[in-house]
Length: 308
Image (tube, rainbow, N blue to C red; front, side):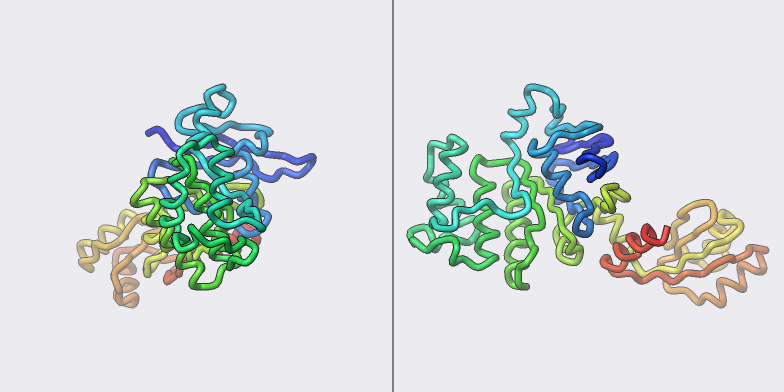
């Protein structure tokens, strides 16, 4: 597979500070990739490196199959657009004039696309209004920022905390806009955020970052599987345990996680399971009931690192 973005041991240091360390991202065409981490975890640094605003100290990355140090990387970057930290808006100009300036900077001759883009982001009613950006709501500014990224017809958009500071209505609007652009225009997204609950409604893949380290990369489907209600049994003979579940208890909705843990997704009578395991000579070392939300999964993942 040719990834839209592939990083290999990507590292960036600022003096003695290692902002990101040996990060390996895999973003495929059509992904909405949620880069999740607390403030200062390294999310913005990754975006700055990928967009060419910072140079990697170690490691490498590829955009659309082009190495970052290849002269053709500039052509690859023409397919990329980004909002880093906050949208770069001219506060004393209208929405239309902001987009007009963006067209001029990118060498876009046909400025008729401005009206189309304003419609796409839900700001079409402003096309002929002189209302200055400084009077916009936060949600309007975020939508205008995304409109700026659409000038040049990118295939890959990187958004740095696009839902930060928005009210619930604004969050829904931005979420629906991203989903629509992904589905209708086949735009791939990398979205950094610490608001996992909102990203979980649109993301197809996640990368969890902590103190500059990518600690886990997981698909949305895998994450939902991790968060399903289940019972985990730690046993001394997992193969024998699986046999007993199937042949004695007629339980097939389970998964063997490793050489010691079996996860059962059916609702079970734990007393009955313990009884049958005891008859088979299987020692149960631990029983753990799982019923996590995605937010709890993330907090437990981070908490485990803090406790390590």
